[in-house]
Amino acid sequence: MSDGKKEIVVPTFVRYLEVIQGENGAKTAGWPYSHINLASHAASLLYDIDGDGQKEIVVSTVNGEIVFFKYVI
Image: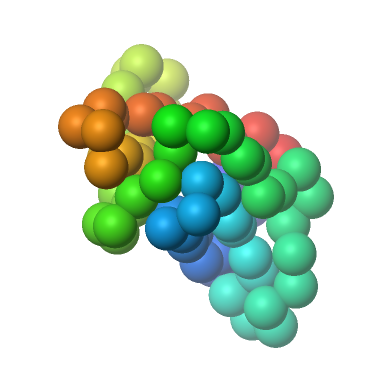
């Protein structure tokens, strides 16, 4: 996300968070991320929660949790 290239962030209904390359749909290294409590029915957001100038991925889960993911290249 900090390389200037577009990615698509997809939270799924089945406990996965996927990041794919926007230009060709290729998988991004280190993704998908899976966790038992990660099921989401909403779009993800980008927000700089820690003020370091890099936006984190924000996902709301069906359990009402707000989860932040640090995207590192």
